[in-house]
Length: 348
Ligand code: XIL
Image (cartoon, rainbow, N blue to C red; front, top):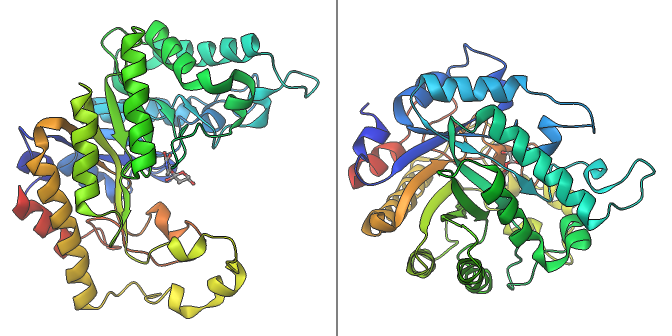
């Protein structure tokens, strides 16, 4: 089949990810897809604080170095994912040697050290950085994370100041989040960008993760967010696109009995990985509709990155519960292009 990134040349970059298991297995069949179809690359896990630096004085460079090497050899635009996130970050980051909460100054120093180390090691090769991930709730309030407990509502601003000072001057600094089509979060992100700009704090783009479902979000909400973010003068990156065919809404909420739901065959209807043709078609059409919207607004968008390579290893087989056979990406469990792949190609 033709190359995806070639098909979208002049519109936006097309990215994918390298998982830790690919980084550990040079003969993973996913590499044929990654090198042919993507011209941008994100690390799925290896650069997260807990993966890179699980204990105070312990650094795991190997997988991340390998990630950067692959991206460089493939000539891809690489993404540093992620400097500061409340998740996959160990408790020690926020504590002193006695387990007491760090002072504001001490936490900022730790954050600065992390940015400095990453910039020193990869700053000449990684151009795009997710500086802060998911610090804003759907209602527009600041997330009550450990960062927020110590640094207060200025956490995101202080993180961007550190990134601006420690990363190369031509680095592209992104704020990244899910649910960026929810009006409360959208408005808060717009207000934050305006606030940063008025204070001279660099922010170059917004990452809309794009962990979307078959009927969430509405296409009009995607358009409204693209328009609102671009109007502040930043670029939009779709940073983690996938479509959760099985859906996850039913696993969240106050009175949900997770164990009963997990045991219910209706929550995992295609355990052998064979999707009925009608579902395959519905999935492909949803992808095509989304790409039609992205193309209509391509001048606002620098990059569209898929979160993963194939349905065999998509994280959605394990989220929000383990053990599902999910359908999320353009390549199937045998690494073959799906009908959705061809429909997306047709939109270009
Ligand atoms: C996910 C990875 O894909 C999984 O392998 C891991 O177990 C959990 O994290 N938002 C993000 C990504 O910014 O880093 C997450 O990646 C998915 C949600």
